[in-house]
Length: 369
Image 1 (cartoon, rainbow, N blue to C red):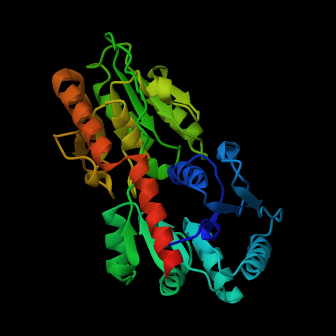
Image 2 (spheres, one colour):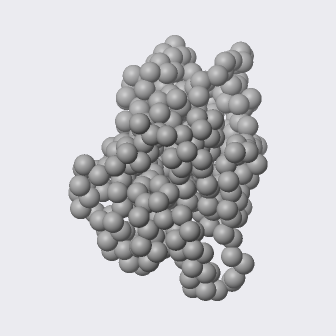
């Protein structure tokens, strides 16, 4: 039996800016704080916009170091983390995302910490190609970490087959969503499409724009595309492309933490990424009984069953995406069926409560051992 005063955990992440991982983490730790967990959140960069939504019981430690020289910043953060580990060497520690994992694990090894160490991998490992020696370093760290949590079987498969991690060390915990009274607004004769994805190259917005260009004359004149997400530096180029393709007047750009009103009024949710771990966007679409079109990448097929609750298409395929959009537009009964089936899917398999419970169970196992 775990005593309440031993339910302590240290979470380390880059920041709490808007992203799928950050939103899931916020929900998990806020709920664990209500369950008498003593939580310390350590951010390596700025706290981030989601920080204002943290449960007041959570202790926040922001290590943001204001040095322009990256190597100096790196060593200062490691030094600060070593001090934290040495001060509380037994506190269960969970690293979210690659930067926190690499920096945090190195610090824990130097500090000779005695705590259990957990890592979350929430994307496919393609990012390792962009960071020198990343895969080599992570393969070494995998031997030192006690548990690796992933949010799709696709990620687990990569870890086992490409990074030599034992299956026994890995636990798959899917993202979850809290179902509220998500009321659908009557659609009238509009056709509204939504893509919920930060403006990042791998999200592949340009493929969607090109697809819409092919079929824009077959859609109603008042069709709309809502692009919901934070600009990571490519918005100007996307706007330029939309003007060139003559679809800019139909596109609405939105950055918000509360997209509920928009989602409730849309007919179709789209994800056209080149890569994904397990996207929250699909869960959000399904919570409003929207049909979904997504590229068959990462863990997408672990929730989308082709032609049963949505449509899976090959990545970077403009023609297939345009055909799928037209199919949903022209077949309203099938679109409704996909949306209803999608809602059933998340209600039974992807609830937020299930996600939180599974995280808590893994933490308790670590504490017991």
